[in-house]
Image 1 (cartoon, rainbow, N blue to C red):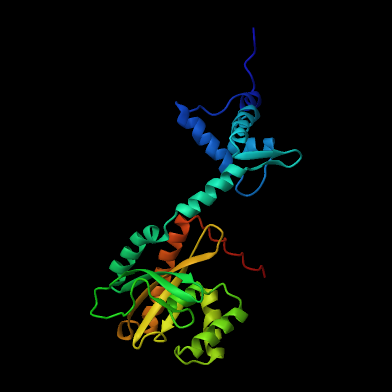
Image 2 (image 1 turned 135 degrees about the horizontal axis):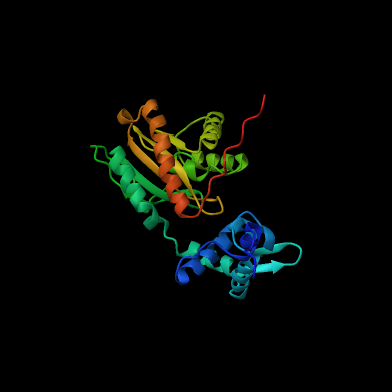
Length: 274
């Protein structure tokens, strides 16, 4: 009479009780792909991470290789395949940032009662793609389709946060020559450096008299800044304390849109041990 297998043998020869239907196979296939997000894996490591037997893992991976979602390199393991690159490129092309951001803009406008903008970079200008007027009796002159200087608008500064300082200087000098709000470059640069560190930017009545704004960048899956969100209002509603309070809210809305574009923020660095 055959003896009952030990727990170790059962772990190697059977998977957890499967769900019924083809959806379980689909989900397992997706699990295989997601398991390699941090880099290539060998069969044993992949099976251990998934909690499946090697035979089941190998069968799933082989099917994904046949459909070009994975590739296998001897002595290195399984890698993402060309199909994922193709689909990722198509997904990026098909993503409409205006449509994606609209619910977040509407929520921000409702919560703040101020005017909310969405813009992208168009050469050396900020191009306004969407605008939701605030409930306050404040006139903001911007219009969808307007192009404004990068260095004197909150939206523009947010779009330029990743630029190197040398390019900041070029943009600044050009905007100053074209009549932007006069300010000393050392002061402007110091503010930009603080904006880079904090992840948001301010417009301190530099683009329009008595109008202030708080802006934050939207990033895509690669981490590149592709758009920005801003909240604008009259200076009487935008003292320094409120602008600082709004910064986290605007940055949060921008991060929500970024997440829908596939952006994953880097984990905070651990502090030094004493």
